[in-house]
Image (cartoon, rainbow, N blue to C red):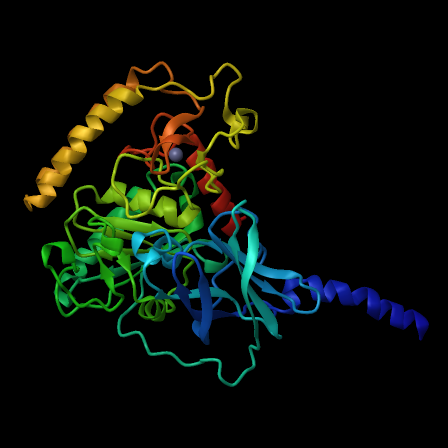
Amino acid sequence: MKSKLLFALTLLPYCLFNGNTLFSSEKPATMRVDYYHTGNALMEIFSLHRVVVEPLLWPGNPDKNIDNTNRGLYLFEIVEPLTNAVLYSRGYSSIFGEWQNTAEAKNMHRTFHESVRFPRPEKMVRLRISKRDDANRFATIWSMMIDPEDMLVVRKSRALETKVLSVLNNGNPAKMVDVLIVGDGFTASETGDFKKYAAELTENMFAVSPFKEFKNRFNVWAINIPSPESGTSRPSNGTFRWSRIGATYDAFRSERYILAFDNQALREIAQYAPYEFLIILTNSETYGGGGIFGQYTTVAAKNEWRQYLMIHEFGHHFAALADEYYTSPVAYNEAMGSKPEPWEPNVTALQNPQELKWKAFVRPETPLPTGWPKKEFETFQKKNQAERKKLRRENRPEHEMSELFRREQEFCENLFAVSPNHDKIGAFEGANYEATGYFRAQINCLMFTRYDKFCRICREGIKQVIDLYVD
Ligand SMILES: [Zn+2]
Protein backbone atom coordinates (compact mmCIF):
# COMPACT_ATOMS: atom_id res chain seq x y z
CA MET A 1 0.00 0.00 0.00
CA LYS A 2 2.72 2.37 1.00
CA SER A 3 4.72 1.75 -2.13
CA LYS A 4 1.65 2.27 -4.30
CA LEU A 5 1.00 5.63 -2.71
CA LEU A 6 4.57 6.67 -3.28
CA PHE A 7 4.23 5.69 -6.91
CA ALA A 8 1.13 7.82 -7.24
CA LEU A 9 2.86 10.80 -5.66
CA THR A 10 5.92 10.61 -7.87
CA LEU A 11 3.70 10.33 -10.92
CA LEU A 12 1.64 13.37 -10.00
CA PRO A 13 4.17 16.11 -10.73
CA TYR A 14 4.91 14.55 -14.09
CA CYS A 15 1.21 14.62 -15.00
CA LEU A 16 0.85 18.21 -13.92
CA PHE A 17 3.90 19.44 -15.74
CA ASN A 18 3.34 17.52 -18.91
CA GLY A 19 1.34 19.77 -21.22
CA ASN A 20 -0.10 16.81 -23.09
CA THR A 21 -2.23 15.76 -20.13
CA LEU A 22 -4.01 19.11 -20.24
CA PHE A 23 -4.22 19.39 -24.01
CA SER A 24 -6.47 16.60 -25.31
CA SER A 25 -4.40 13.63 -26.42
CA GLU A 26 -3.08 13.90 -29.96
CA LYS A 27 -5.17 16.48 -31.74
CA PRO A 28 -6.65 19.23 -29.58
CA ALA A 29 -9.20 21.71 -30.89
CA THR A 30 -8.24 25.39 -31.26
CA MET A 31 -9.40 27.67 -28.45
CA ARG A 32 -9.59 31.42 -28.83
CA VAL A 33 -10.12 34.07 -26.17
CA ASP A 34 -11.58 37.29 -27.57
CA TYR A 35 -11.23 40.33 -25.33
CA TYR A 36 -11.39 44.12 -25.35
CA HIS A 37 -8.23 46.07 -24.64
CA THR A 38 -9.10 49.53 -23.36
CA GLY A 39 -7.15 52.46 -21.97
CA ASN A 40 -5.18 55.62 -22.64
CA ALA A 41 -1.50 56.60 -22.67
CA LEU A 42 -1.15 55.84 -18.96
CA MET A 43 -3.44 52.90 -18.18
CA GLU A 44 -4.99 49.83 -19.75
CA ILE A 45 -7.59 47.23 -18.83
CA PHE A 46 -8.65 43.94 -20.38
CA SER A 47 -12.20 42.63 -20.40
CA LEU A 48 -13.42 39.27 -21.64
CA HIS A 49 -15.62 39.22 -24.73
CA ARG A 50 -15.95 35.43 -25.13
CA VAL A 51 -14.17 32.10 -25.23
CA VAL A 52 -14.51 30.31 -28.58
CA VAL A 53 -13.73 26.82 -29.84
CA GLU A 54 -12.71 27.36 -33.46
CA PRO A 55 -13.94 24.96 -36.17
CA LEU A 56 -10.48 23.54 -36.99
CA LEU A 57 -8.05 21.49 -34.92
CA TRP A 58 -5.03 23.21 -33.41
CA PRO A 59 -2.55 23.79 -36.26
CA GLY A 60 0.55 24.03 -34.04
CA ASN A 61 3.35 21.61 -33.27
CA PRO A 62 2.67 19.99 -29.84
CA ASP A 63 6.42 19.96 -29.13
CA LYS A 64 6.68 23.73 -29.57
CA ASN A 65 4.29 25.03 -26.93
CA ILE A 66 6.66 27.33 -25.07
CA ASP A 67 7.91 30.56 -26.60
CA ASN A 68 11.50 31.19 -25.49
CA THR A 69 12.31 33.92 -28.05
CA ASN A 70 11.55 36.86 -25.71
CA ARG A 71 9.81 38.93 -28.40
CA GLY A 72 6.80 41.21 -28.24
CA LEU A 73 5.42 43.97 -26.03
CA TYR A 74 3.01 41.47 -24.45
CA LEU A 75 3.19 37.79 -23.51
CA PHE A 76 0.28 35.44 -23.02
CA GLU A 77 0.59 32.20 -21.12
CA ILE A 78 -1.74 29.28 -20.45
CA VAL A 79 -0.94 28.16 -16.94
CA GLU A 80 -1.78 25.07 -14.89
CA PRO A 81 -3.59 26.74 -11.92
CA LEU A 82 -2.23 24.57 -9.08
CA THR A 83 1.42 24.46 -10.02
CA ASN A 84 1.70 27.61 -12.18
CA ALA A 85 3.42 25.45 -14.81
CA VAL A 86 3.31 27.17 -18.19
CA LEU A 87 1.59 24.92 -20.74
CA TYR A 88 1.59 27.26 -23.72
CA SER A 89 3.01 30.75 -24.34
CA ARG A 90 3.53 33.27 -27.11
CA GLY A 91 4.87 36.84 -27.17
CA TYR A 92 2.90 39.33 -29.26
CA SER A 93 2.28 43.01 -29.89
CA SER A 94 -1.03 44.74 -30.58
CA ILE A 95 -2.80 47.69 -32.16
CA PHE A 96 -3.57 48.96 -28.65
CA GLY A 97 0.12 48.75 -27.72
CA GLU A 98 1.03 50.89 -30.73
CA TRP A 99 -1.87 53.30 -30.27
CA GLN A 100 -0.76 53.97 -26.68
CA ASN A 101 2.26 55.85 -28.09
CA THR A 102 0.20 58.17 -30.31
CA ALA A 103 -0.72 61.76 -29.41
CA GLU A 104 -4.41 60.79 -29.33
CA ALA A 105 -3.86 58.41 -26.39
CA LYS A 106 -2.88 61.39 -24.20
CA ASN A 107 -6.36 62.88 -24.58
CA MET A 108 -8.80 60.00 -24.71
CA HIS A 109 -9.58 56.35 -23.98
CA ARG A 110 -10.04 53.87 -26.81
CA THR A 111 -10.94 50.18 -27.13
CA PHE A 112 -9.52 47.58 -29.50
CA HIS A 113 -10.68 43.99 -29.95
CA GLU A 114 -7.92 41.36 -29.62
CA SER A 115 -7.60 37.58 -29.51
CA VAL A 116 -5.20 34.94 -28.25
CA ARG A 117 -5.29 31.34 -29.57
CA PHE A 118 -3.97 28.14 -28.03
CA PRO A 119 -4.68 24.38 -28.00
CA ARG A 120 -7.92 23.61 -26.17
CA PRO A 121 -7.06 22.36 -22.68
CA GLU A 122 -8.85 19.37 -21.12
CA LYS A 123 -9.14 21.00 -17.71
CA MET A 124 -9.47 24.38 -16.10
CA VAL A 125 -6.47 26.66 -16.86
CA ARG A 126 -5.43 30.22 -16.15
CA LEU A 127 -4.83 32.71 -18.97
CA ARG A 128 -2.14 35.19 -17.95
CA ILE A 129 -1.21 38.28 -19.99
CA SER A 130 1.97 40.17 -19.17
CA LYS A 131 3.44 43.41 -20.47
CA ARG A 132 6.99 44.69 -20.46
CA ASP A 133 7.88 47.08 -17.66
CA ASP A 134 10.37 49.96 -17.91
CA ALA A 135 13.24 47.48 -17.69
CA ASN A 136 11.63 45.35 -20.44
CA ARG A 137 10.78 42.53 -18.01
CA PHE A 138 7.32 40.94 -18.36
CA ALA A 139 4.90 41.69 -15.52
CA THR A 140 1.37 40.25 -15.34
CA ILE A 141 -1.41 42.74 -16.08
CA TRP A 142 -4.40 40.43 -16.57
CA SER A 143 -5.31 36.93 -15.57
CA MET A 144 -8.49 34.85 -15.70
CA MET A 145 -9.58 31.24 -15.26
CA ILE A 146 -10.80 29.39 -18.34
CA ASP A 147 -13.06 26.38 -18.00
CA PRO A 148 -13.13 24.58 -21.36
CA GLU A 149 -16.33 22.76 -20.31
CA ASP A 150 -18.24 25.95 -19.45
CA MET A 151 -21.56 25.86 -21.31
CA LEU A 152 -21.05 29.48 -22.39
CA VAL A 153 -17.96 28.67 -24.46
CA VAL A 154 -18.95 29.50 -28.06
CA ARG A 155 -18.93 26.26 -30.03
CA LYS A 156 -20.69 27.23 -33.27
CA SER A 157 -19.48 29.78 -35.81
CA ARG A 158 -20.88 31.44 -38.87
CA ALA A 159 -20.06 29.26 -41.92
CA LEU A 160 -17.44 30.50 -44.37
CA GLU A 161 -19.09 31.48 -47.64
CA THR A 162 -16.10 30.70 -49.81
CA LYS A 163 -13.36 28.11 -50.24
CA VAL A 164 -9.96 28.04 -48.57
CA LEU A 165 -7.33 27.95 -51.34
CA SER A 166 -3.93 26.31 -51.06
CA VAL A 167 -1.04 28.43 -52.38
CA LEU A 168 1.84 26.32 -51.04
CA ASN A 169 1.24 22.91 -49.48
CA ASN A 170 3.97 20.94 -47.74
CA GLY A 171 1.66 18.74 -45.68
CA ASN A 172 0.48 18.33 -42.06
CA PRO A 173 -0.11 21.82 -40.56
CA ALA A 174 1.09 20.60 -37.14
CA LYS A 175 4.56 20.09 -38.65
CA MET A 176 4.63 23.31 -40.71
CA VAL A 177 4.55 27.08 -40.31
CA ASP A 178 1.08 27.99 -41.59
CA VAL A 179 0.53 31.37 -43.23
CA LEU A 180 -2.93 32.57 -44.32
CA ILE A 181 -3.47 35.30 -46.92
CA VAL A 182 -6.82 37.12 -46.67
CA GLY A 183 -8.14 39.39 -49.44
CA ASP A 184 -9.77 42.75 -48.75
CA GLY A 185 -11.66 44.83 -51.31
CA PHE A 186 -11.55 42.29 -54.15
CA THR A 187 -14.98 41.80 -55.78
CA ALA A 188 -16.16 38.40 -57.06
CA SER A 189 -14.90 39.25 -60.55
CA GLU A 190 -11.52 40.27 -59.08
CA THR A 191 -10.91 36.94 -57.32
CA GLY A 192 -8.51 36.05 -60.13
CA ASP A 193 -6.44 39.18 -59.31
CA PHE A 194 -6.36 38.18 -55.64
CA LYS A 195 -5.09 34.69 -56.52
CA LYS A 196 -2.47 36.15 -58.85
CA TYR A 197 -1.09 38.53 -56.18
CA ALA A 198 -1.23 35.85 -53.48
CA ALA A 199 0.81 33.48 -55.68
CA GLU A 200 3.29 36.17 -56.75
CA LEU A 201 3.92 37.47 -53.23
CA THR A 202 4.31 33.93 -51.87
CA GLU A 203 6.85 33.14 -54.56
CA ASN A 204 8.76 36.32 -53.79
CA MET A 205 8.77 35.67 -50.05
CA PHE A 206 10.44 32.32 -50.58
CA ALA A 207 13.03 33.92 -52.84
CA VAL A 208 14.33 35.93 -49.84
CA SER A 209 16.67 34.44 -47.19
CA PRO A 210 16.08 32.94 -44.71
CA PHE A 211 12.53 32.06 -45.85
CA LYS A 212 14.09 30.67 -49.04
CA GLU A 213 16.02 27.96 -47.17
CA PHE A 214 12.90 26.89 -45.22
CA LYS A 215 10.32 26.96 -48.02
CA ASN A 216 9.52 23.26 -47.55
CA ARG A 217 8.56 23.90 -43.90
CA PHE A 218 5.75 26.36 -44.75
CA ASN A 219 2.15 26.05 -45.91
CA VAL A 220 0.41 29.08 -47.42
CA TRP A 221 -3.40 29.26 -47.54
CA ALA A 222 -5.66 31.95 -49.02
CA ILE A 223 -9.21 33.17 -48.47
CA ASN A 224 -10.97 35.90 -50.41
CA ILE A 225 -14.53 36.76 -49.45
CA PRO A 226 -15.78 38.81 -52.41
CA SER A 227 -16.33 42.42 -51.51
CA PRO A 228 -19.40 44.34 -52.77
CA GLU A 229 -17.17 47.22 -53.94
CA SER A 230 -13.66 47.22 -55.34
CA GLY A 231 -10.84 48.90 -53.38
CA THR A 232 -9.81 49.94 -49.89
CA SER A 233 -10.63 53.03 -47.79
CA ARG A 234 -8.15 55.86 -47.87
CA PRO A 235 -9.74 58.65 -45.82
CA SER A 236 -6.94 61.17 -46.52
CA ASN A 237 -7.98 61.40 -50.18
CA GLY A 238 -11.71 60.88 -49.64
CA THR A 239 -11.84 57.19 -50.66
CA PHE A 240 -14.31 55.19 -48.57
CA ARG A 241 -15.15 51.48 -48.94
CA TRP A 242 -16.98 49.10 -46.64
CA SER A 243 -14.57 46.41 -45.49
CA ARG A 244 -15.67 43.33 -43.59
CA ILE A 245 -12.39 43.31 -41.62
CA GLY A 246 -12.13 47.10 -41.32
CA ALA A 247 -8.97 47.46 -43.42
CA THR A 248 -8.06 51.08 -44.12
CA TYR A 249 -5.17 53.42 -44.92
CA ASP A 250 -4.43 56.33 -42.57
CA ALA A 251 -4.32 54.15 -39.46
CA PHE A 252 -3.32 56.46 -36.60
CA ARG A 253 -3.54 59.25 -39.26
CA SER A 254 -0.37 58.03 -40.98
CA GLU A 255 -1.13 58.08 -44.71
CA ARG A 256 0.73 54.90 -45.67
CA TYR A 257 -0.25 52.82 -42.63
CA ILE A 258 -2.88 50.16 -43.35
CA LEU A 259 -4.51 48.26 -40.48
CA ALA A 260 -7.63 46.09 -40.21
CA PHE A 261 -9.56 47.24 -37.14
CA ASP A 262 -12.34 44.62 -37.03
CA ASN A 263 -10.45 41.82 -35.29
CA GLN A 264 -13.59 39.80 -34.57
CA ALA A 265 -14.57 39.68 -38.25
CA LEU A 266 -10.99 38.87 -39.25
CA ARG A 267 -10.73 35.96 -36.77
CA GLU A 268 -14.14 34.61 -37.85
CA ILE A 269 -12.83 34.33 -41.41
CA ALA A 270 -9.30 33.17 -40.59
CA GLN A 271 -10.48 30.36 -38.29
CA TYR A 272 -11.45 28.32 -41.37
CA ALA A 273 -7.80 27.84 -42.38
CA PRO A 274 -4.98 26.38 -40.30
CA TYR A 275 -2.85 29.46 -39.54
CA GLU A 276 -0.20 30.93 -37.30
CA PHE A 277 0.55 34.03 -39.37
CA LEU A 278 -1.78 36.28 -41.36
CA ILE A 279 -1.26 38.47 -44.42
CA ILE A 280 -4.01 40.85 -45.60
CA LEU A 281 -3.85 41.91 -49.24
CA THR A 282 -5.75 45.12 -49.91
CA ASN A 283 -6.99 45.72 -53.44
CA SER A 284 -5.26 49.09 -53.75
CA GLU A 285 -2.38 50.75 -55.55
CA THR A 286 -1.23 53.50 -53.18
CA TYR A 287 2.00 52.65 -51.35
CA GLY A 288 1.12 51.27 -47.93
CA GLY A 289 1.08 48.40 -45.50
CA GLY A 290 1.61 47.44 -41.89
CA GLY A 291 2.87 44.63 -39.71
CA ILE A 292 2.28 43.87 -36.04
CA PHE A 293 4.04 41.02 -34.27
CA GLY A 294 1.68 38.10 -33.72
CA GLN A 295 -1.26 39.92 -35.36
CA TYR A 296 -0.97 40.35 -39.13
CA THR A 297 0.76 41.91 -42.13
CA THR A 298 -1.05 44.26 -44.53
CA VAL A 299 0.09 45.03 -48.09
CA ALA A 300 -1.30 47.18 -50.91
CA ALA A 301 -1.41 44.39 -53.49
CA LYS A 302 -1.32 46.60 -56.59
CA ASN A 303 1.57 48.82 -55.57
CA GLU A 304 4.73 48.48 -57.66
CA TRP A 305 6.73 48.00 -54.44
CA ARG A 306 4.39 45.28 -53.12
CA GLN A 307 7.10 42.59 -52.97
CA TYR A 308 9.30 44.77 -50.78
CA LEU A 309 6.30 45.96 -48.73
CA MET A 310 5.17 42.44 -48.00
CA ILE A 311 8.50 41.07 -46.91
CA HIS A 312 9.32 44.16 -44.80
CA GLU A 313 5.95 44.13 -43.03
CA PHE A 314 6.13 40.37 -42.63
CA GLY A 315 9.46 40.93 -40.83
CA HIS A 316 7.52 42.91 -38.18
CA HIS A 317 4.65 40.43 -38.02
CA PHE A 318 6.63 37.19 -38.05
CA ALA A 319 9.76 38.00 -36.06
CA ALA A 320 9.04 41.29 -34.26
CA LEU A 321 11.84 43.01 -36.18
CA ALA A 322 12.05 46.75 -35.49
CA ASP A 323 12.11 49.34 -38.23
CA GLU A 324 15.72 50.26 -38.83
CA TYR A 325 14.77 53.42 -40.75
CA TYR A 326 14.54 56.80 -39.10
CA THR A 327 13.93 59.45 -41.75
CA SER A 328 10.25 58.72 -42.61
CA PRO A 329 7.51 60.29 -40.49
CA VAL A 330 5.71 57.91 -38.11
CA ALA A 331 2.65 58.30 -35.90
CA TYR A 332 4.41 57.63 -32.61
CA ASN A 333 5.79 60.09 -30.10
CA GLU A 334 9.55 60.01 -29.85
CA ALA A 335 11.02 58.25 -26.87
CA MET A 336 12.43 61.12 -24.84
CA GLY A 337 15.50 61.18 -22.66
CA SER A 338 17.86 58.26 -22.17
CA LYS A 339 17.13 55.38 -24.46
CA PRO A 340 16.42 51.99 -22.90
CA GLU A 341 17.72 48.90 -24.66
CA PRO A 342 14.96 47.84 -27.09
CA TRP A 343 13.76 44.21 -26.84
CA GLU A 344 13.67 43.83 -30.62
CA PRO A 345 16.53 41.63 -31.87
CA ASN A 346 17.78 43.96 -34.65
CA VAL A 347 18.24 47.35 -32.93
CA THR A 348 20.27 48.40 -29.91
CA ALA A 349 20.86 51.47 -27.76
CA LEU A 350 24.52 50.32 -27.49
CA GLN A 351 24.76 51.25 -23.82
CA ASN A 352 27.71 48.90 -23.47
CA PRO A 353 29.46 47.83 -26.70
CA GLN A 354 31.01 44.90 -24.76
CA GLU A 355 27.51 43.50 -24.27
CA LEU A 356 26.15 44.16 -27.76
CA LYS A 357 23.40 41.57 -28.24
CA TRP A 358 24.75 40.46 -31.64
CA LYS A 359 28.41 40.62 -30.56
CA ALA A 360 28.93 36.95 -31.56
CA PHE A 361 28.64 38.13 -35.18
CA VAL A 362 31.03 41.11 -34.86
CA ARG A 363 34.72 40.73 -35.77
CA PRO A 364 37.09 42.03 -33.06
CA GLU A 365 38.62 44.66 -35.40
CA THR A 366 35.24 46.24 -36.27
CA PRO A 367 34.85 49.58 -34.44
CA LEU A 368 31.69 50.14 -32.36
CA PRO A 369 29.91 52.31 -33.26
CA THR A 370 30.69 51.63 -36.91
CA GLY A 371 31.15 54.45 -39.41
CA TRP A 372 28.94 54.99 -42.44
CA PRO A 373 28.08 57.97 -44.73
CA LYS A 374 25.32 59.16 -42.40
CA LYS A 375 25.50 62.87 -43.33
CA GLU A 376 25.22 62.25 -47.09
CA PHE A 377 22.37 59.82 -46.49
CA GLU A 378 20.46 62.28 -44.31
CA THR A 379 20.96 65.24 -46.66
CA PHE A 380 19.59 63.18 -49.53
CA GLN A 381 16.70 61.80 -47.47
CA LYS A 382 15.65 65.27 -46.34
CA LYS A 383 15.25 66.36 -49.96
CA ASN A 384 13.53 63.12 -50.82
CA GLN A 385 11.01 63.29 -47.96
CA ALA A 386 10.04 66.81 -49.07
CA GLU A 387 9.49 65.52 -52.61
CA ARG A 388 7.45 62.61 -51.27
CA LYS A 389 5.21 64.96 -49.27
CA LYS A 390 4.72 67.15 -52.32
CA LEU A 391 3.67 64.19 -54.49
CA ARG A 392 1.04 63.17 -51.93
CA ARG A 393 -0.15 66.74 -51.36
CA GLU A 394 -0.67 67.22 -55.11
CA ASN A 395 -2.27 63.77 -55.43
CA ARG A 396 0.15 62.80 -58.23
CA PRO A 397 -0.17 59.41 -60.00
CA GLU A 398 1.26 56.52 -57.95
CA HIS A 399 3.91 55.61 -60.52
CA GLU A 400 5.63 58.95 -59.78
CA MET A 401 5.98 57.89 -56.15
CA SER A 402 7.25 54.45 -57.19
CA GLU A 403 9.80 56.16 -59.43
CA LEU A 404 10.94 58.41 -56.56
CA PHE A 405 11.45 55.29 -54.43
CA ARG A 406 13.50 53.70 -57.23
CA ARG A 407 15.80 56.74 -57.46
CA GLU A 408 16.10 56.83 -53.67
CA GLN A 409 17.04 53.15 -53.52
CA GLU A 410 19.61 53.50 -56.28
CA PHE A 411 21.23 56.45 -54.48
CA CYS A 412 21.43 54.56 -51.17
CA GLU A 413 22.86 51.38 -52.64
CA ASN A 414 25.53 53.33 -54.60
CA LEU A 415 26.41 55.37 -51.51
CA PHE A 416 26.72 52.30 -49.29
CA ALA A 417 28.68 50.24 -51.84
CA VAL A 418 31.72 52.52 -51.56
CA SER A 419 31.70 52.68 -47.75
CA PRO A 420 34.63 50.74 -46.25
CA ASN A 421 32.17 49.14 -43.78
CA HIS A 422 29.59 48.10 -46.36
CA ASP A 423 29.97 44.39 -45.58
CA LYS A 424 30.64 44.64 -41.82
CA ILE A 425 28.43 43.63 -38.93
CA GLY A 426 28.75 46.28 -36.23
CA ALA A 427 26.60 49.07 -34.80
CA PHE A 428 25.52 51.71 -37.35
CA GLU A 429 23.89 54.74 -35.77
CA GLY A 430 20.33 55.57 -36.90
CA ALA A 431 17.49 53.07 -36.38
CA ASN A 432 14.14 52.56 -34.71
CA TYR A 433 12.83 56.00 -35.88
CA GLU A 434 15.75 57.84 -34.24
CA ALA A 435 18.76 59.46 -35.93
CA THR A 436 20.85 59.16 -32.79
CA GLY A 437 21.03 56.78 -29.85
CA TYR A 438 19.75 53.68 -31.67
CA PHE A 439 21.91 51.45 -33.84
CA ARG A 440 21.37 48.76 -36.49
CA ALA A 441 23.68 45.84 -37.28
CA GLN A 442 24.60 46.43 -40.91
CA ILE A 443 24.79 49.39 -43.26
CA ASN A 444 21.78 48.13 -45.22
CA CYS A 445 18.83 45.81 -44.63
CA LEU A 446 15.30 45.62 -45.94
CA MET A 447 14.14 46.83 -42.52
CA PHE A 448 16.22 50.01 -43.24
CA THR A 449 15.78 50.87 -46.94
CA ARG A 450 13.82 49.21 -49.79
CA TYR A 451 16.70 46.79 -50.20
CA ASP A 452 15.97 43.21 -51.26
CA LYS A 453 17.87 41.43 -48.45
CA PHE A 454 17.62 41.16 -44.69
CA CYS A 455 20.81 41.92 -42.74
CA ARG A 456 22.49 39.01 -40.99
CA ILE A 457 20.95 39.84 -37.60
CA CYS A 458 17.40 40.06 -39.00
CA ARG A 459 17.97 36.70 -40.74
CA GLU A 460 19.00 35.17 -37.41
CA GLY A 461 15.96 36.73 -35.71
CA ILE A 462 13.64 35.17 -38.32
CA LYS A 463 15.32 31.75 -38.06
CA GLN A 464 14.70 31.70 -34.30
CA VAL A 465 10.97 32.13 -34.92
CA ILE A 466 10.93 29.43 -37.63
CA ASP A 467 12.55 27.19 -34.99
CA LEU A 468 9.65 27.94 -32.66
CA TYR A 469 7.23 26.33 -35.14
CA VAL A 470 9.10 23.51 -36.90
CA ASP A 471 11.70 20.89 -35.97
ZN1 LIG B 1 18.17 44.13 -40.34
